[in-house]
Length: 208
Ligand SMILES: [Zn+2]
Image (cartoon, rainbow, N blue to C red; front, side, top):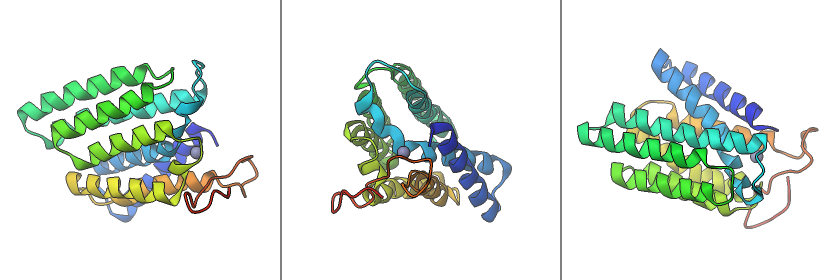
């Protein structure tokens, strides 16, 4: 399944969660955005395949990394004090610049490092862990660890910490739902998938 479909399913997940939590219009917008990003995140593992050639998937990766940068700017403006606002803006812009260079190998790894730096400067555990996730993903082979239960648990913890930081109901369920929707859409039982996912890594590397 391609990036656009994954993002669309994730966005729909966010919309459903927003409705069940009676979210305000602005919170609904945020949840729809978070859902679409979460629906794209498992495919951050295609960096290993980058060979200086840009495909649609690489464009989607670049887009999701840039969205993380933009979200970081918005987040620091809503949640943080004056100095932190400018710090968040600076780092968000930096993440965007680095992400715009994602057309060659290792740029995703560097983006992850920038996200970790952002997390430390804003003192946000979820952002630090997200950076760690991006770096691990950039070294993982496609459809392996990010597409496993271990990946779900790791990302779920990031989502849990993000909801605690934002104080907005539905963030955890949206992120988790968007992520899980990606794995379901990648299952081998679906007719449009040639390959499945290794859900039970590292215990079993059988493709489901
Ligand atoms: Zn995938």
